[in-house]
Image (cartoon, rainbow, N blue to C red):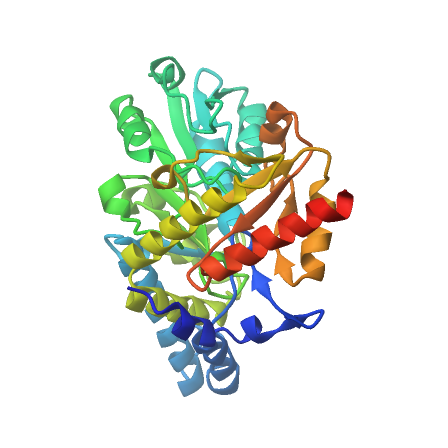
Length: 407
């Protein structure tokens, strides 16, 4: 079991006061806070190992390179990749998904084929595929949702067909919290020879994810959503696919041989990491993975299930509040998105902030789904391993203050 009080002490920002009230941070789906261990690893990297990687024979460069590649090894182990070479450093999930869309999509899809996404996609896993569809004149197909906010797979045989080239789907929705049945969808995609790309930005930080077990071809996630610094993300790709893939960016480091008229590419994953890399933040990601691994991802998932069950029970007590997405904690991540009749989410967020409670308001990069629901925006409270029932109680008390204010 997790010792939440002990965990909270590792996060210095949780001691912060907002209007003389302790911060209650419930915006974890946007970005998580950083423990002392990660913060100190970044400070130490600048103080002791600040040197470009892979390019120097001097001690500091070799030390930096060793730490940089050790972090890649930790990522590979964390998601059970077959090889460290299947782990590509990028800036964030968005860049990883764009890499797949540009480098694989534009070169492998034609006008007779189709791409399949879902209604629950973050803009980062929708807009790049819209671009590929427009450039290749292929069809973009969308798996619909049920009224509860889960995927409606009743017509999956008509959507994923022999002409489907890739299925790119979110694992856990940042908007509804829905945990999608990716095993079933991947099995269907594989049966017709389609590739599969998983947006795992909201799953890898919150539950065990095994890329070999789910058998995806690509998987993307961000460090800043799992206790690490912003500016470092991961694209996982199967070795045999990455080796055939053209690079997304071209320039220094990703080349093997260059003449004035041509160039050949370096081995994977280096051929996708052009230019001076972010050689500091991967170290923080490695330490964040150590932190999460010591707690155990099964424990993180169970804690969030307990939190979301409690949150949904408490929030539904509030008159006029409507939960967006499934109400079964087994089908939902630690995300509680809601709307209030006649009270705008930005007003809710502002009043809660005055009470030290940080939530997210807006369309959460899910504008098409909001339009489907007839909503311009919603409020979202999202939880992580340092949150507890007391944080949820404060949220509910704050929501009651919101109602009283507008009365």
